[in-house]
Length: 266
Image (cartoon, rainbow, N blue to C red):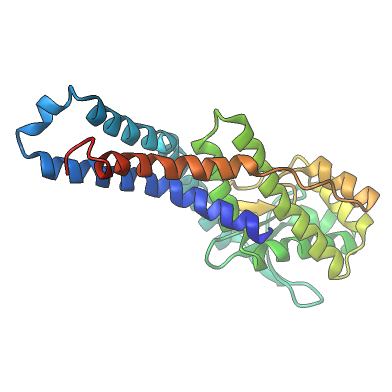
């Protein structure tokens, strides 16, 4: 991931969390100044109503996050079970991974603090060694770059702003950056394009935990085209994320502006 993409993701996540808290601070400041008996009367005041509307708008992105959190908790339980049942292995060039029983071709990296690479028994049996190694090298970049944490942040943004198509596309573009970065790292480490292509094709359609960064997590077709042509597509615009950060920052600023300009009492 580019540093600019990382910064935008961090600012957007901070905005989703911080906008309600900072807007609530403006409300708390107003209530402290209004006194115990001021609120019922003041709820007929347009500026005070606007203050509460800003707070309500700041809460909207959080609506879908509890459901996403429950899904992640279930996936974390599955991963704990998988970890207990997996066998630690090491490739010939010293890359550690965990082998788990599954007939399909699956590769993914899981764990935010201490990410681990997982590969299925079916991958070891069905892929030639060079293709298996190429997939492991791809996952090693996910591990080194802590892409699992970034992908979780992107999933949270996607869920929070699901109705807004430009933001969904920008989030998908950043997720694809992770995959292209992992592909480039695998090729730089010695994997051949045809072997990585073979591994991606074999793993296409396989399911992986949502709390992971997998070999075919996103943009599979674009990546296959890039591997076949040796040319990556142009960098999609992430301007919607810039507007998102600006919009999230505007809510608490507008709420506090009502206080600073004396439209509601301090």
